[in-house]
Length: 279
Image 1 (cartoon, one colour):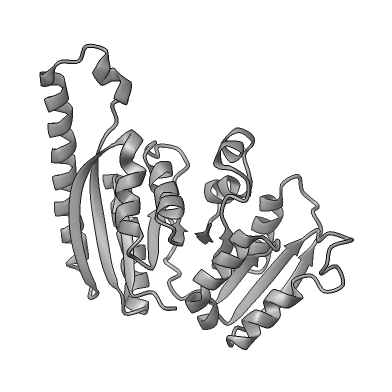
Image 2: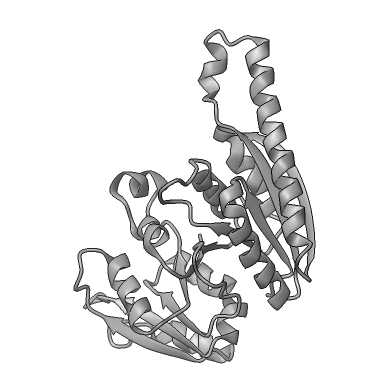
């Protein structure tokens, strides 16, 4: 597999320059086409329309979202014209409750989606459903990039969070073009089960699989010395100066992740490097 069609979704002027820069860098490295979908978001709750809103109110919200989409598209074209990669810009309007479907309809025909971190101060509420639309309905891997770091389109040192799950294995397969280019891939296993089938060689089977693809893999077995697995993983990222994390997304249900938190959300909130995820 290779990345030949890359998508990014723009809903926020403040995040646009950083996200497009990262996406364009990834597209250039992989000789891929970059598509930018600029969405004006109608953030009015759907139920509001059935509480007596008249046609003028509906028209006003639609016009506002349309103007926002057109402005984003114009600005995106201006940013991408500065790059030397193949690109295209499209725009449209989506209701907040339905934005995931719009993203998925485009994402499912791409190899990779590049998005900004969805959590943090000043981040729009639409960023989370955009991410989930690509991952779940679109069934495509997503690279989530922080705003304030240099794009690691060709990372040299990658941390692979490995827990034997289907999601983690899907992430490994999806990220293979990146893993093969890296100098070292650290397969990180945290507190492996003492009585599991791979207890004598945790991470051994996946590292052998990677080696057959020409990936230079090392297995790092870590103790869970901090309350959350994501904290242990992030500390290891810092300790070895990794520039990307590859991991499976949402091992539990999304509802449970939202209520209790989880490794996926914690990583997306705190990671200072790009996070490549698949579900």
